[in-house]
Length: 362
Image 1: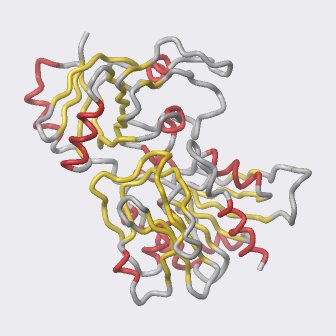
Image 2: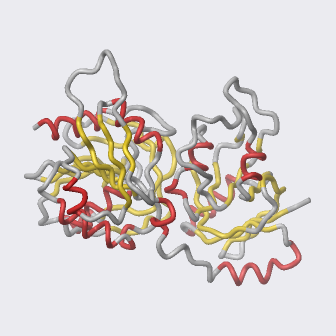
Image 3: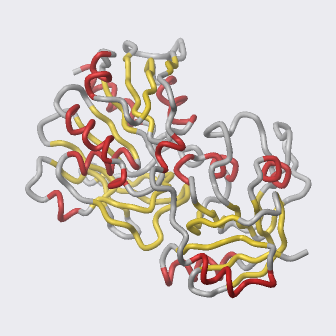
């Protein structure tokens, strides 16, 4: 049996179905990671997207109970060159095909993922559909042009209610514990785990939580999480963050970084094809040190828009020179565009949680 990936440009890739044999539409993006496909599938930042893995062999170490980043698969569809049918790893309790089938998510394998990636790099991120209806491709080509992402995608991935997570005890930990309120715009499990390891007692709140309610929790600091979509669509979050500025130390990552910039008067724009993968080089402007980072975003901060604002650029992406980090010039506020907890990816940037702790201590 065959299925197709149909793009809004009219380009069609023919492959084989795996996972659920249903039709699904979304924004087609590519991820350059060599591992971490389970984290990608369950990362809320990928909501409403069809993800192509550029590494050719996917699924070879299976699926386990520990690597999920949320309670469900978040992608709309999955594209691979080869999907391993018989994974081999001591932690594996399932394979990729079964994982997608149970979640009713379609996959397509056997296409030229290199050609697809080059097509996206040429035209930018594209709308697309995975379908097994090969007799109506002309209709599908027209219909996909009108596809739109969910209007309020954050509401689909944010927690509906407040919950708490205690700090993890560690014999080697130096320093006291801190109470952090995390605004959930689509937070990943590994981010929470990284903060637990640093001695943070975390209160996770829905993205619509007011500044008054957040401050009533008496936090030592406020964390702004990752999440999907256009930051300008999250007006409630932007308003809340602007009201919190100057009240507590603030640390934002990914979408939280963009929302913080908007709350402080800056601007954001959509990248041509975004940064997605665990191999993005980022340089600290002050130390000149380069870290390899894990990233997943389609928008970036407009550097010109922060001129005249009390913000300074602290990190840049060495591939395209986009802004990767900001710090307030007078207040204990900073943010980065990447994922310091690295789920998946390198651990180069875990020190940022120490810097957040230092701001709360001060």
